Image (tube, rainbow, N blue to C red):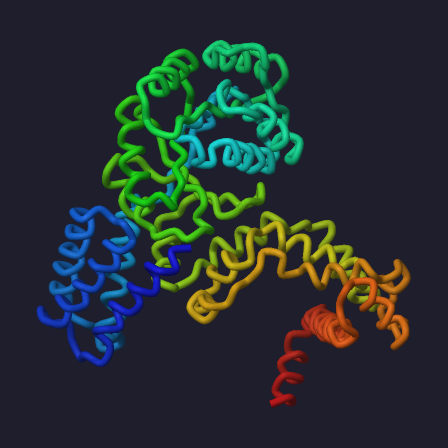
Length: 442
């Protein structure tokens, strides 16, 4: 996410390293590189120019504390200004009404249908929400089928009228259906076009005027850069939408849309899509995104994702198994499934401070656990429950069945044993014992 921009900003801010204080000369040199980095990221020229002007004014107006390096102070100022550029504060969606109607708008290919499913799944997991997905795209071939597939995948009902070609009528009927069937959120997936046109705008304006949604979201492909911002302005002039959704942030995103869109349309970014999975959706936090762009990581979001997947009852069961030395590969497999639900691996690594820079050239596959899962699935139920019975001949069979080598099976067994010991030590205040063991290994 924003790898290229992060690298260029990092190099630009390194210009001040070794300087004892901020001066007009060295800050000008640094901010010239910062502006270049923003322009390369497809940020609007005026926005980039105003941004660096504000940073310069703040930097020259401050004295560097003895505990700070000039570069550290400038990083903080840049971080604060990036946060403001992207909206300043987190803005949620309006779900006060019942049902709350959410109208999705955007061009074809921006990811509206997929994101509609992600949003439905996100709200469904909040326990108090029972969303209804509505197929209002009557033009694109297989659009209705696609939404039904998404709905089946996440266990959310999809309302469609295959013979009806009037999206206003479909939306109105869907809201009636929602009221009669206990749905407290209605998500309208509307049609997109390959470009902004009058017919498209008139249609979505008619839906908007008729159903009067509590929330209108504009979905934009983050990889289209400045074009995305121009399209957002065209939609906002007609719909006066409530917020922006940036999709495909896991791709080769330059960052221009995220950094420019708030200034141009004066509407907050509310959600981001970070992958293909239905769980790959995040509330947009400008401060956290600024930290990630500057390579500071995003530990808070990482913890929040972990908490979302945390099953208290399952955790208690595992604790009991660890205490009785009964933690097996089936339990290990469940832990892997929980980690996978948190999102794609590269995105998760990017949330760890410093790890993003270290791993920037490493290609982390989204199916990083595939080999481990294959090895575990090649074990018998007894072997998964009692790993200690796995001998040399069993390892050969497991390796053959999983398409791996005996060395890889041995490596997994070793990692599993080490993890089991560590988890055992952490039980009942065993952290101190673990620290002693680690000191003894030095």
